[in-house]
Length: 444
Image (cartoon, rainbow, N blue to C red; front, side, top):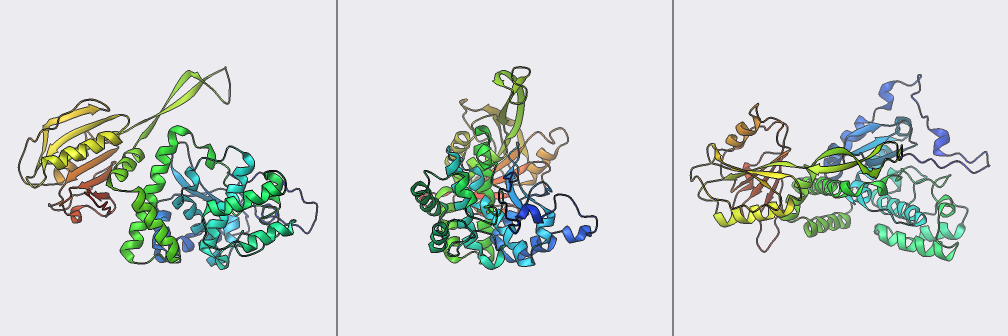
């Protein structure tokens, strides 16, 4: 996802990032000097929101790019890539700022948005996204070439530089996009590469590369969007637990919280969790053209499959109506694959196990009335004959039982009944509490 834009400026004093950053390790530089661990640790400890998202985002060294980026692979795994030589040249505070810049691209859903069909609009949108994010971080924590509302960039167009200097801070991507779009249409018929090259750093480059954001296959977009939303919600939860957002301005924190509350009630989080647990199956098909070797080899189609175990607490304090409500939402959220539904109390009732395909009629029945032991679920899933069978486990319960041990190889979500207690869930698992009129969302 590197910027492949050539340097078209003939001025020998016009130095670009590409000219100053190595694209291979320098043998005279110690490998320790390329490490960014200190900056990552600082973000983790001083920025609860950004740090929580960062720790869930794998870091990738990429010598082919000029600066840094966030992207997703073909399995919808989000990662943060960076050129070590670029990061090495930055002061500590700017290393931190670049990391936060990339994390905020995830939080605001930029990597999951559909790119504007018009290429010129897509380039303007990239600039607007950087203006919105850089305004939050502030100029003191970013390299000087970064675009910043309220500051005139280096530009061959004085009017455009003055426009950006006039921009207020802490506005949305859409706000900056609309203002830039209006200017582009009034000064050249819609923008395009000429428009992009006239602002930014010395070569019109934004801080990072956004080149592949709009290329996410449709069959992965929902999975990726759900994953990004879940990571953002976990960042919000971390900030709320610590009662601080680090350097995120209060008005931006309030906006993010409002966004999460608006989008993520317990049913939405259930859908998000099931979307994230889908595994990717690939198969060849002559109905799809192979992009690399057209008409010589068949194309590839990807399908998503989720193997999910729903374990239902049978204690008397878990009402049948709540179970039916939980199952109805789970069936609605699971668009493919099958659900294995089983009852448990102090042991798993294996005789109650039913495998239900999407759309299949199913009638749940209570089979036990005992106490509750969550370790019954753990023992069942960790049994060697089932290990690796389930990509996810959803436990529906009122939460009144001792904490469960570790489940190996499966993501775990807890759905707590409306009158239940969330404290039994393990730290690190996703946990939601059913609400009635209000949408209560909590996570361990």
